[in-house]
Length: 161
Ligand SMILES: CC(C)(COP(=O)(O)OP(=O)(O)OC[C@H]1O[C@@H](n2cnc3c(N)ncnc32)[C@H](O)[C@@H]1OP(=O)(O)O)[C@@H](O)C(=O)NCCC(=O)NCCS
Image 1 (cartoon, rainbow, N blue to C red):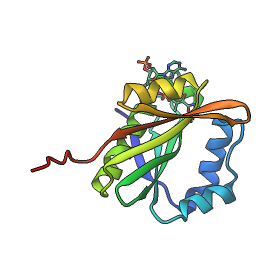
Image 2: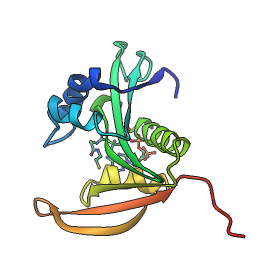
Image 3: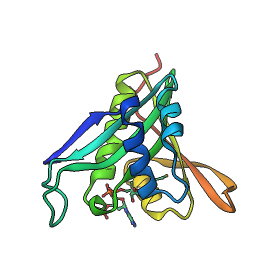
């Protein structure tokens, strides 16, 4: 994607990530929670920075999106993903999702798991468009709203002898 750079997220970015989260979620993670997540073994993340070309009508460079994922052995999970409102519907969510899948697969993950509120049409549609299939439903998981769980294969295909 022209003009977008994906930078590794680290502890030093906890406050920035929390600020972005606060814009994107009704129940955002605090900088402290963000730091705790980043500190968990197997957690990695990326921050999408727009050099100024993508934002419609604007030239100011700045952070545009984030994705954090965790990996335990061959299982990876999207912990959070978000695109700031001015950058939405321009393909950035897909870029972040694919980058997380590629990085997790390179690190040894064979599958990626995630969950989303069943009424989060943007997220569920994005995930479906990128090959995730529904594997479960957690009734009332988000304060009365169901959560859908989704998974897709991301690692090498193992051919049984
Ligand atoms: C979900 C989110 C990350 C999508 O980011 P995005 O950059 O807009 O996604 P993309 O532009 O890559 O969208 C890819 C496809 O997903 C689907 N999609 C994205 N937003 C959609 C919406 N609001 N309604 C319906 N479909 C949507 C479309 O099929 C879209 O393709 P199209 O634009 O060609 O139709 C973004 O809406 C967001 O940050 N939401 C708030 C945080 C959040 O809910 N995160 C997920 C928690 S599980």
